Length: 71
Length: 427
Image 1 (cartoon, rainbow over the protein chains, first blue to last red):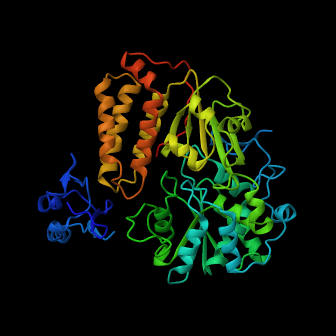
Image 2: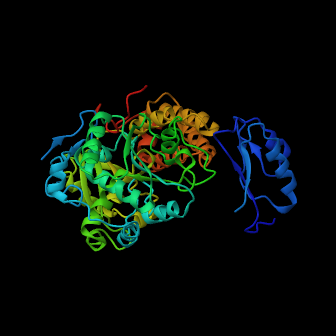
């Protein structure tokens, strides 16, 4: 897995997140859900191969709680 | 000498009348004249000279994180827009009283320091964000007198911090002063770039500012004559629990922690553990505490930190689990309720702990469950409330491991009904 310094990271705005779960559906490679439905992202680094999927998940979040941050 | 400072706070007396902030006498310097007699006026210094003093003195923040003041100043100076400065005296931590002591007894040092950082950052607005127990009218009168005396070129607005554990968190401070609720915010930008009303903002603890006011008068070398090379100067501590004279003390960084207890006239009974750094802090065994120093770098090896200077000694006859249970329930209640893992997780964790502490049959399953849930809440919030709460719990489960086993066997070592760790009145 690529983890170059320039790789973006998934960031959750926890004050906005409602646990709707779209991110886990669209990006199961990186995101699962805890017992209350909130996203669990053990390694937030987004590999190049998943970049498009990650951007789709960010765009789909109904609460605008998911972001891609460059490191 | 023991002067009751605040009857609502268990740990509320001044006991050591020396050190940079306490001076030769703990007497109040609330009167402007008493302040000027004790300290003289702040020398005229330009913006660059103030920054220079912050760099040369090595002054770090006294709100808990220990971040160097000069780096915050530089960030605000470099940011675009008219700066705002904030003296943070929220002190939401129930076991801490040192910021209230400062604002009650040394308010002019804090306000001198606020003007100094305003000068350094060319700020146009300044705020004093004060603990809810302090009277806004009293502070406003002090400020009016300073203004009349020409001491405050930048006018200062007093804002009462809401009575909440997290109301002093930097983004909560910024949010409240901007006109919203005092709740932590998602950190999309640093407040030094976009803070109060979107402007570059310096939020600095009141003790940090008071020390800067002394450094401006006496110089960086004077400040460095106390403390250690990597942590210069002194700090105020609120020492409570099983000590003979609970209260506020002042001592240099690097002081042996055993000497810190001696400043509070020593332990009042045989000690089993000490809480260092407050309710987001770390429990240490009495032996670990006795051999450690008040040093951020050395305490890091024990997973501990001086934090904002809270020290609570737990004596024999009290039960660490009962004490922790009450505090964890309080911390769960003090969740701002914004972030799912904290809102859902902390009450569950607190209930599992309660079942072990009060022998409701939680058993080993409950211990494992609170640790498992802890793993889910840590690192998953807008602020460090879940992380800090779990540091408190995990370190306590280690230090009170024998007490845990006792409880699992249906017993408890508690022989006294005393409440040691204070929690605010439930709202």
